[in-house]
Image: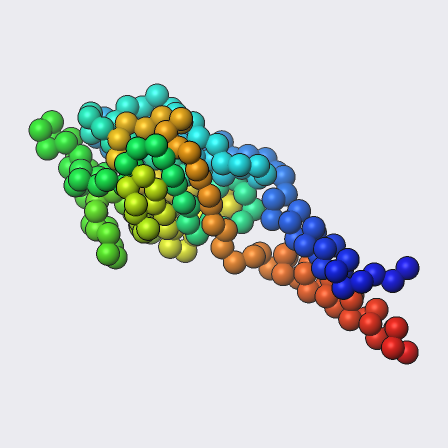
Length: 214
């Protein structure tokens, strides 16, 4: 039975999808966020699972500044590199007012920050860093923010969060799991295995076309 171009493309897409969201053991989350201010780990952890929507977990850590700001971690348990994540919330998570985790988060108490300056047009002090595993790397590549509409924003991860990796950053307000109304991760370039599967599907269709002509 000969397959149409549509059928070949559908088969290739299904195989590619299974490669991108294939299962596997979920790495245990260690200290995804560093010690900052009053916090010894993230207040919120956003997990990107192998399949299904992102999940949000509150760890019980309070605002790192003792007032209103939350330390957030992202764990990548997919098989794709994640280059950014869009966050939408019920409150002004992007209303940055100068007490991010890179600076002194509470001058009154003297609590220390991480001591790095954000790069790019943001430079807000709320930027965290990317890690190759589930343990915070404060010296890693800094993430950045864009498209900030206060109740929604994009967190960018230059170079991407690799599978099994993580990142952290800070947001305004004392957030809970229920604070977020939308989380959309942006995967990077398809993996080589995915591209080869799609290529094989198209090559197979080409062979069928040749046989039909002869």
